[in-house]
Length: 111
Length: 111
Image (cartoon, rainbow over all chains, first blue to last red; front, side, top):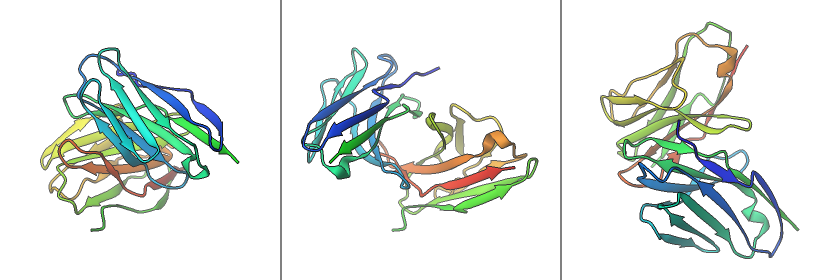
């Protein structure tokens, strides 16, 4: 059974502060690591897809890093804003095209 | 482009009834998948397809059937609905090596 773990489960951050959270995944049989943003009552939206060890991706104030050898990825948000409140999902993709999600980190930005 | 569409948006079934959840995409994506979302469980992969005529099982395939006769459509069939299948169902599609695009979801209640 493939295990994708995200921590913390929930996080409260003051507006303007920076934050980060973790996704852990199997270091074997790796093809890609996905990050998604999921707002309440909407559908998940893709942030990044990363494939290479050492990959770093950035989109505005959000960035992500990837370590495939040790099986983890970090998502960073700089200068949190109220619109960043959402659940952030990571997903592990194996070479057989199976994409398995973690349970997510629920981020609350406090005004 | 309409992207990924799902019908119906809401459905109530009685135990033992059958139904088909429809999913269609107009982006000519080869890869399509079905997930279910339950509280505290994140998104769990039910079935997926890497192209017309090809389907495979995900994490929780029992009680569900799929087929992929065209690139555009990927219906999910519940042959004999059970209360444990009460959930929100998301369909997704993607091109080669890219992020998934999700449909708006179908909220299913089985009484």
